[in-house]
Length: 70
Image (cartoon, rainbow, N blue to C red; front, side, top):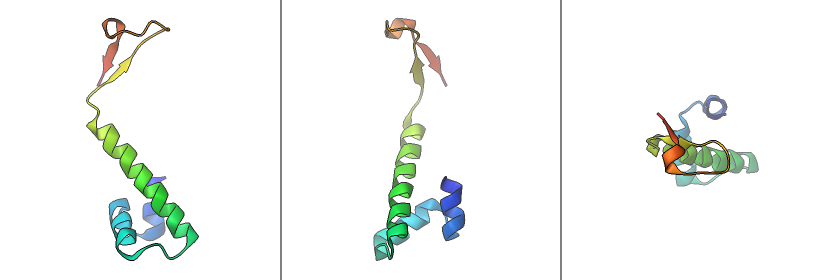
């Protein structure tokens, strides 16, 4: 999805977000793409901040039974 936006606007997703923030969207489609791009960047930022993901089995969730996935 990110690649689609980058191809559509011929720039990186970060550049697109910065451009729209400076000059405001010119169409509904551009506004929608801007909202999607900021969401994608937020997800990527959160994923890069995660050091590990805890996976547990069953309904008894405790850190003792968790497996760390890196």
